[in-house]
Amino acid sequence: MATCSFVVMLMLLPGLALFYGGMARSKNVLSVLTQVFSSGVFIIALWMIAGYSLIFCKGPWQPVVGGFDKVFLQGITVESAVGSLPEYLYCLFMALFATITIGIIVGAVAERMRFGAFIIFISLWFFIDYIPMAHMAWGGGWIAPLDILDFAGGNVVHLNAGMAGLVAAIMLGKRQGLGTTNMAPHDVSMTYTGGCLLFVGWLAFCGGCNYAISGLSILLMLNTLIGGAGGAIGWCFAEWRYHGRPSTLGIISGTIAGLVGITPACGYVAPMAALAIGIITSIACLWSVNNLKKRFGFDDAFDVFSIHGVGAAAGGLLTVIFAASLLGGTGYPQDRNIWEQMGIQILGISFSMLISAVATYLSLALTRRVCPLRVEEDEEALGLDLGSHGEVAYHTDRIGSD
Image (cartoon, rainbow, N blue to C red; front, side, top):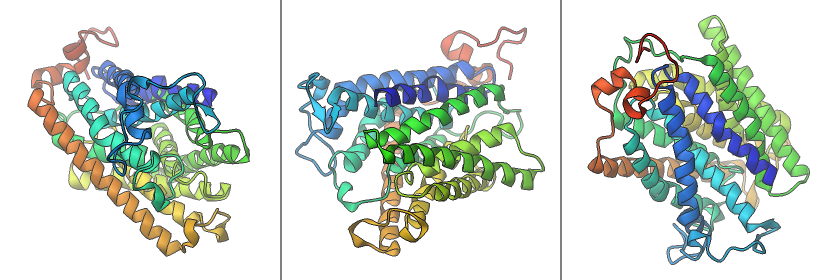
């Protein structure tokens, strides 16, 4: 578990940072790296101060949120345990789930959000959204007894972040010049490197959720690996078919989509089912990028909603199908049939989407009362690296170039 925690940390820093950084324009790459890094360190601090306690302690509003018994990690010692794990280790591993969730949102608001507004927003969102969502699912809240099939955080992490990214992108508005200015990734090799780190880290992300070394833990890792491979294959051939050639960015994006899809399913399905889930999920995500995003015209800069939101929803529904014992899965809890479990699954997904949308709107609305959400027009044109942070990633003759 300590090793898994170390590898999951690499998913955020530098994995997600590089993945998003390469997709930014050169004048904004440092701002993206800084936002991802800052989301990690601020959420780690808030987690240790109150997040862990409010998620995993009992409180007077137990169905929705926990209590204050362990704020500032008080009462936890080196002798404390959660099951077979030292409690400090459990606290550490779950903290990283929170950081990666909020780091994902950066990709939707990139290249236009004011840094101060971003810090206020993620802090509010952590308390208004993530803590109740995680408690309701993992900390003894009302969702846990429903037995939704979500082994490693498809709803709490990916669907939650995907919906937050969609709402944030809509409220922030489109980037200047969208549709007329070249906004292609400035360094696909950077995104490739970050994507590879995410692929490696995801094995620890899902594999660690059994909290022990066992055959199930290895199955979790194997299914995660296969799901990611299926995602790459599905996106590759779909893109090849409709655009005439497969792209490096597409194959990496398909891998992430497949990993998102297998996250809820990894503990309930057989390995070959994981391949199918990865393929189907990545095709659904590619459809969203090519059709849904264009049809509604929102500027989700790095396709957070299409990959994490649509991917988690697709993966959650596919989990029910492929968990059937007929297909080598574990079957359904409480002696349910497939239709009963699908109804529970749809309820959980719909609830997660609704809560995330409302909580994100409230967090941004409150942030907007403190400071503007977007940088000034001239700063956006110059680039957030120089405008917000006073530095540039690449020293060229053209400061602020795309």
